Amino acid sequence: MSFVEMVEMLDILKRADYDGKHGPYLKPNVRKAKIMTKVVKRLHRNFGVRRSKYQLRKRWSDLKLREHDQYRRTRKLLRKKRN
Image (cartoon, rainbow, N blue to C red; front, side, top):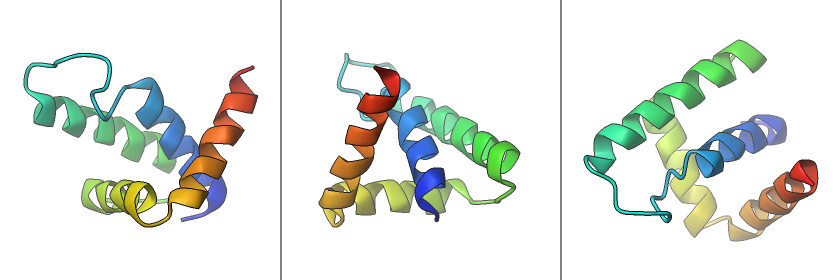
C-alpha cells in the first residue's frame, strides 16, 4: 500500500470515527463494515486498486499497533491538510 493510499484510508477512518471514540454506537460491527466498504470503494475509484475489507482492517491494526511512528506521521500530515 502506497503512502498516499494509506493517507486516504486514514482520512476516511478518522472522519467516520471508525474506532468509536465519540460515543457508544448501536451495532458497532455493522457500522465498521459499512465504513470499510466506503474505504474500499474510494481506494478503487481514486487509485484503481482493489483491496478487500479484511486486508484494510489488517493494515489498520498493524498501523496502530506495530507501525506507530508511521501512523503518527500520517496523522500529522492529515492535521496540516485540514488547517
